[in-house]
Length: 307
Image (cartoon, rainbow, N blue to C red):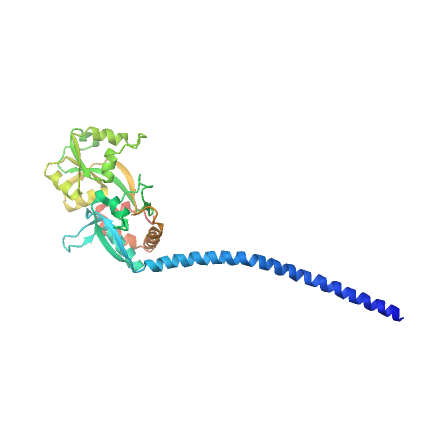
């Protein structure tokens, strides 16, 4: 009897021991898995938090900074001096003012010689080129915002000129602003035949010159120095509105292109902040309110941001 009780007790102890082993193995395995996964999850969460912190730190560091816009002061309606107030204004500068107001930046409007625009931005003298800056064909030269205006290069002539079509430009004296998109349209040969029509047209002129600014070009055309001006349509519309009945635009454009804001190549952080704010302005109707100030110059019809 004692022997039987002893055997029973031994069996119970063994079963207890087996149960204990089975019970401890499952939590141990679970704990090991948790310990292995936790560092990876923590690392991923840390990376995400770090990215958010970095972006926040970048924006915080930028708040209160001076944002210097390089522009051509003789390029209405995008950038020009208001004769009544003596202040620099224009469609692009009004956009820049609103971006800075929302970002907590101080805007510095920096007139530049447009011929020297690359030196100005590459040296850091200006933060961006924001003044009817042509994106089309220069996609790899700068870091760009998204295009915001559709633009056409047109031919402007005196109202009483006998020039009615581009073919009538043969034997005429034509001018464009130096280093402008109009100059590029008439002289650039990409080597693939895509601009042969304009190159051949330019070859028919009696002469072709470039000039520092379009205000001077229009005054000289009115004086008979030039027969025609190759110019952005917004600039031409500004001159037509300011000088009613003095000039007109040919129906056939030389080319079509888009405007965007140019930053030094690689400066994506500043570009992204400006683009984000522009998108907000387009979404809440602010861009439309600003462009309405330039309805006489065809700008509302040219606007593509937010469309």
